[in-house]
Length: 270
Image (cartoon, rainbow, N blue to C red; front, side):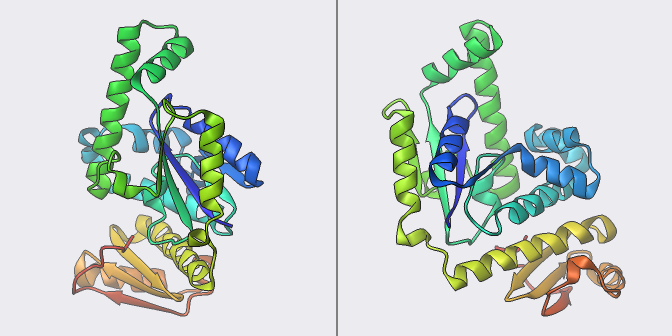
């Protein structure tokens, strides 16, 4: 019951590969559904979420907290969708939004620039020069996004378990490779892996719920024990205590909640 994330550039046939892998394995195939879920749950227009994950960082710096909130909402929606496993996700930054989950197979699909330009020309009925400019701009914006948000370059091979070049392999061969990798014992869902996924989903739930009420925070969850790091100090911590003082659906099934105002924030905190 592995979770498969497929990272791809525009017009690299990654969506086609994802859909075929999901069909072959009998998994759910997820992409835009994550945005729809986040939009419905947090009453944010889908277009704002789309802009938040595509606009370059220099634009979004004008409303930095809004960017963080939107990403938290998307991460919550993804965690809920894939929580039970058996899922293929080929949307925004899946390889980064599910950190420390051992049964996530992270795949990167690559296509040659010639293939991508040809696909864009056919789709938009534009010239080769125009298609190349559009793709280069999109690639650069994705790179800036990844660097600004996570400090990594999406081209870094260490971010992935499997990188597949579609200028060397056919789509069928890519599907076969991914399915074979997903069946490896390395991506087996153990009790420890299931616990890690549950903890991530709970941390996402708590952070997404609190952000709008208390401002920027960091959250971790270990075995149902939630740590909330109040970046704004004692005043923010008091707002957090007030928010969590009454029973809420978002706080169900949590073993304990602790608020910290000092000390280092773990790198894996959301």
